[in-house]
Image (cartoon, rainbow, N blue to C red; front, side, top):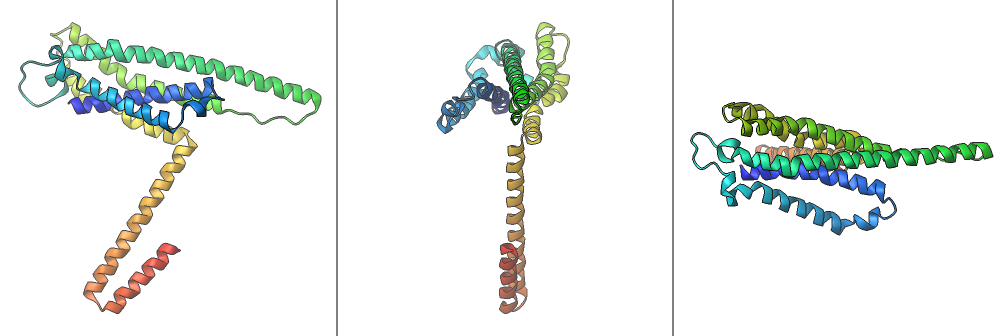
Length: 254
């Protein structure tokens, strides 16, 4: 359960890192590539997973977050005390949600200012009879992507965390089956939504997925052709196997 919690925490922190990356790209467009270079990106990802494992394995070192005695299958609330979820909600989730809202509002304000400047430039160019400069809607695309990420994050994790807080306050409510069978899966399902959202909104991500799928298709085709060539060599004469292999290579080159 500590490993599962660490993975869920890494997913949440990844959404925060993406939001901060888009915020930095809009806030400091001229210095963005100087700040967010390869070394900084690697350090951010390594720090993200380090913090995630610290969060997931925190109950192993803090006994108040452990269930002292339990029976039955290994499940989230059978291993972790509800006060662990309460601590994560108060220290992690709700501050992160406020930070998301700040990023979104500030990015929306900056994008609106950029749009107004572009409209003024176009108006001045139209009065002077000059060529109208092309629009740059990249800021609003970044704001839209962050808004969708924040919305899916909030809708996925809020029911689980609020119901967990209710369970901590009301020990007689017995909301554990609902939390573990439905709301926990809803929160973890946010990890599946994030790559789908980026694959839908970002053209670069779609191109990467297309190249990966094409490479897997070529590799599978090559494997099947080699298997068929080997089976042909075992069942028939060597010349036919050599002929199949030659056809296979010519088809792959084509």
